[in-house]
Length: 427
Image 1 (spheres, rainbow, N blue to C red):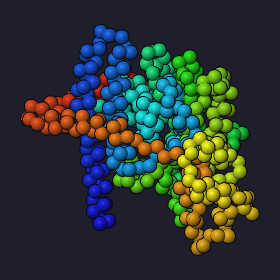
Image 2: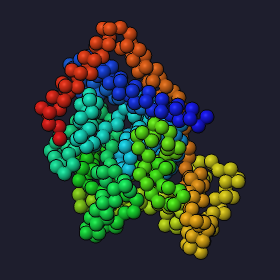
Image 3: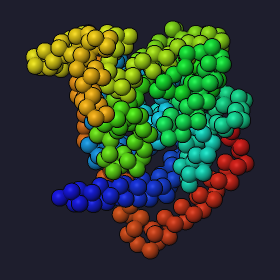
Image 4: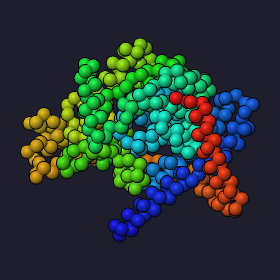
């Protein structure tokens, strides 16, 4: 049975990758038709249709990454409130995995805003056949690491200021992923913090403020809020030893090796964001210090008295009404202060046997203590996109003519879009 399950996971992984990449020519064809229709029309009309097209594709992504894998999404913080709002926002999050962009899909689809996602992304992603070009036309912004072009970014931001073009601008201020397997980057980040009299972070990298500040300053009149998103993937800690390891990546996710994602969202009204660069730089780092504390329970298995999540537990329990009486008793018991100063008396080092600390990492209990609410995604959110794109694959494979069209769109489209990006020099 175990081998059959593994076989199914690999088949699902292969089929998902093949379909997500294989529909590229159809996607390009649909975009070209829509662009041709809207050429004489205002930019917002084109963007309205393009956002719907992008929404369909990202829902297909979620079909494979969430619906098929069965990953459980647990939401915390202001998630219930923001899911009812239709806002233009800047979404910033910690960066640790090649799946972080999928998490943005998971949050935005629950707010019915998935088509409005636009990323600040590294320039090497331009090399993705067709998609590298399409991301730019959709409103994403390419930046070059170590050679930041402020003028190019501001030019791209101008387009997003249009009052009829809603956006979720996604930024990962750390600039690179937190990988325990590359400790040199982590040490370099801590050294930079110490050198600049900033609090060193334990579970995150020191954030870079420049790109995010330009976005906030340039879009200030358009933005309703900033969404401060903190993410933890189960599987990021070796629960036997307590050592942190690399978070699950794209392949791990599609193979079902991440059972649960914890997402904490805090809505910050734009009026509360500092209006000068120096104050914003300090504010951003202080925000990441808070994020570091919020994520600490998931990386250490212990909620300490300084953690905001623990202090908010009672209000979260009242709001969600998600605890049974047994769970409430359990929550009360574990919140007794232990001799070591932690809020979990059963997690003292005296209880460690042969170095095995797996008893600490009871994520069901941690989730309850932190006010987590499981957020299932309806099949209607993803299955229709799978059926539409699946039908397009059947059509393209139907006859010799459609197969030639497929390869022509893929080949000539890739060469043409590479040339276009080179001429435009987008970053």
